[in-house]
Structures are given as structure tokens and as C-alpha cells.
Length: 170
Image (tube, rainbow, N blue to C red; front, top):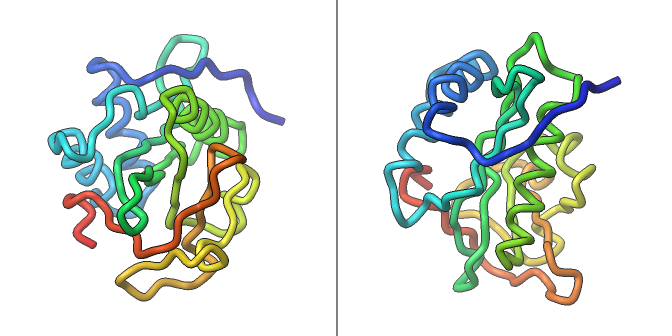
């Protein structure tokens, strides 16, 4: 059973804790370095779409980031590094951060999100295989790992190749 989390946009004071979360959750520093690079890229960074799930003390326990990408020529968002430290996994902090990020994107009028991630995790948020919508990448990844979501039921997903922000290196 999960804990109760307060979700909010990251603040400057959260950056060291977010870095700690990323370093604890991933085997190398690449994801933490990627988030730092995205913060520094005005074409990629969108204030308010880097979300934390905070514990009762206000300390970040889960993290989710949405950044700008394109599907073909259509603007979209990429769900970037999402993380929870190992000692807090399976308690709902990650899901709370992802849900808050998607809600913030909807509130801003964004329409589409792609994620390159674990196919057993992201369908719970409504993501489906991107290939079913004619969405692909320029690199080889397992078909089930690239997923897409429309945030507006009245707007179908565009087809095309995903172009990520420069810090992704794809």
C-alpha cells in the first residue's frame, strides 16, 4: 500500500535532493546529468513540468520530468527520467509524481506525451505502444518500450519520428 504524497513543481531548493534520487535509482550518473543538461536547455526545459512527490517533511521522495520533444512536426512532451530511491519504491511516490506531471501538462494545454520506458509500468497511466500510432524512433529499441499517450481524448496522436531535445543525444 502506498503512502500519501504531496506533489508539486520542483523548486531550486529541490535540485540536490532530485539529484540524490536519480543517483540512487539508476546504475550510473547519466540520468542525473541528463536532467541537469535539460534544465540548462531553454528549448527543452518547461518550468512547472518537473514534479516531485514530497514526504510529510517536504523532502522529495519521487520525481518525474516532462520535457519538449516533437512527433514528426507536432510538438509533444517526453516523459524523461522518473525515479524513486530504492528504499521508497513501491510506496506510490513515483506514480504520484508521474500523475502530477501529466496533470500539469494537461492544465497547460499540452496534447501528447511519449515515453521510452518499462512496458509493465507506464500503461497504468494510459500509455500504449507508440508503433500502433505510427510513432517511431531513429534508434532501435524494443517495440514495447516506446509508448505514447494523448492528453486530449479528442485529439489523436500524430504519426512520425520522435525528435528529442538535444541533451538526449538521439
